[in-house]
Length: 195
Image (cartoon, rainbow, N blue to C red; front, side, top):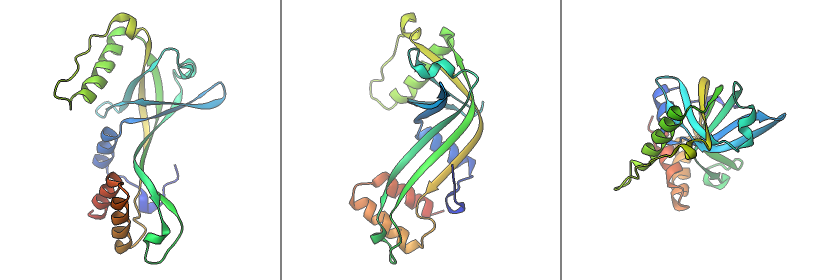
């Protein structure tokens, strides 16, 4: 992705945190000579430098996925920024946070590995509930999916949060975003401004 220097994020702790907090994204690959994407949750195994997940076996993207170089796009909060919010109006823009992860994809259908990734994803997203659901995945259910391991070769991270504007403009953007209910993006901007 094109990343102007103002918006480039290189702090590995920050990037890892973003990936964990925004692990639902798009898996992009080539199938039958055209780009295809599946929207899905991922598990980031940072100690192994990989992403893991699963797709429905009937998903046509599975057909050409094994051994392919792929792109995973993860996105954080985003919203339109009006030029009227600046002291000296510029042009309309969009503020956002995004990570692109490139890597080699391997597919698998070993039942024990499939069960492990499904249980890992389930426990991650059920952990916040008072009564977490405790799954009992039957073999037929696991046979309906294909697991993926993506061995990460490159990570790009961009936070386009008005860092190229003076602090007063950034504060006005934060205020306007809060007025329109875009609290997550406003908070991300405040956090970036404090660095």
